[in-house]
Amino acid sequence: MTDSAGSPAPDGPAGDGEPGGRGRGRRWLRWTAFGCSVVVLGAAATGWWLYRKLDANITTDTSAEAELRRYEKERPRPGALGAQNILMIGSDTRAGSGNRKYGRDKGTQRSDTTILLHLSEGRSSATAMSVPRDLMVRIPSCRKPDGTRTREQFAQFNWAFEFGGTACTIRTLEKLTGIRIDHHMVVDFRGFKRMVDAVDGVEVCLKEPVNDPDAHLKLPAGRHTLRGEQALGFVRARKSLGNGSDTERMDRQQQFLGALVNKVQSNGVLLNPTKLYPVLDAATKAITTDPGLDSLRDLYDLARSMRSVPTEKVQFLTVPRRPYTYDANRDELVQPAANQLFKRLREDEPVDVAPDDEDEGGRYESDSPEPEPTPTFSGRNAAEGVCS
Image (cartoon, rainbow, N blue to C red; front, side, top):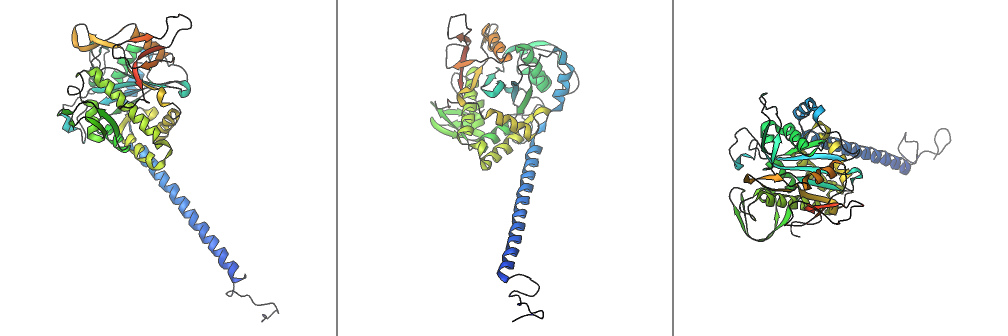
């Protein structure tokens, strides 16, 4: 059959202009392309929404930065180009949801845990140095939250955080060590629990049963995977574990953090979006940081730069210390080991760590003066779990 012009009539519906199969195929391709566009745009919108959500979780501390600018002339010079020093503070504040069960909120807080994280240039190593809360130090005059100022005084280190918050702690530590602090992070009890839960807990081993009402921890001896409340109790417990010293508690905190780092790396969290998001969500909600680290991009760049550091080069140690001469319940530095450690970190030179229960200071692996050997300090690395 032909049309009025003598041409064969089309097989498909009128006005299609193409054989029916080909027309339907092209319509299907158009709808598929449209559907794919919707999916891609939806994924992009979801990704942007998640990014904004995580970014908004982070709390920025601008007051510390403003206070530190007032004392810029007295602060140490920046260290080696590419190296970074990040001060991590665990606050014992009872304010805020979930923290009141640990005691009455008196409107003050002290640094329950203080760790200086030194990231070497090129990220070949990361060294986390714990500073004892009871270390006797010279605390400068600091601005209090109400605008008044404290007097310069010789007192235990964690009082600096109570006196003048993060800025006072940074100034005290910089004067003690000569190390410039580039960034800081503050984490409270609730934030710590969230981060541990995000990685499904951390495994620990107990040689003896623990029953510590103050730390809300009751566990039998043996191997345990600790989450949330139990994990916090484990790192906070003092009198019920070991010899009851703060030194042993710091060692336990270092072991736990090492096991946490090892688990994150071994489980491929950083490369698995479904595992990474809960960790990022918990971490961003947990921290208060300076403006230089207050975005998801900043934190991601930091995490990505550390991804290449081998776990055996993620090292934990405590500043060389011993009981204070005039009060055995306080600490003082062991010299010259402490200054040797500060100098190595300040100049971005390597240090080694090794378990040594007897040695509270640094030691050298060789007596040869040339070349200068790498000093070894009591400590451990992230490759050694709590159960090692």
